[in-house]
Length: 112
Length: 111
Image 1: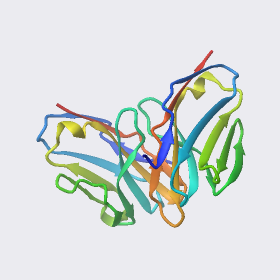
Image 2: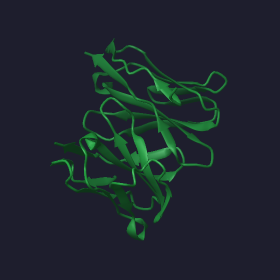
Image 3: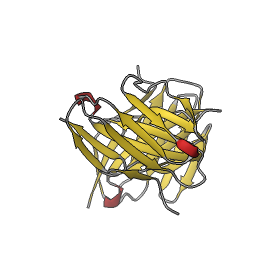
Image 4: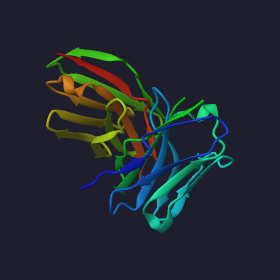
């Protein structure tokens, strides 16, 4: 069974530029998460989807971040414009039930 | 105060040692307790999860939950160099999928 797929794996951009991350969850997992992980910290939730509905986006900085999950499968997370403090690893995870989350390899973003 | 506290380490042990990793939490509403392993430049990998209190064993790994003390532990028996990684505890409330992660403990197992 294929795991969670993310792309790109690495991205370097200048501040004020836009950037987008893509995630393909495990087939059949209705719940999808986007997390941000800073160095030496655990993942912090940005947004959670149940199918195509965003059910928890309270931690998403909505002035610059946006996300979508069309057709309840793939998802895209966008930042526009990026700031220096956005440098982090962006993780996507999917879940079949509470207590189980399966993570992708993450996208390492560097904003210069 | 953070909802979930975890000593960042690093923790260095010789091969074959028993490793004890711990987390404390403040929110009594947490019912699901998970442990993830994260290798460098990889995503977290689910090791174990338990619901409510008690112990759960899986091979060399044992997870314990003490809800009265708001304390969870992961024990690794016969530790191997391949166990060297960051271990993250995580918790969720009943009925919701929102998960709070600890900061992770870095473990080094020396051959």
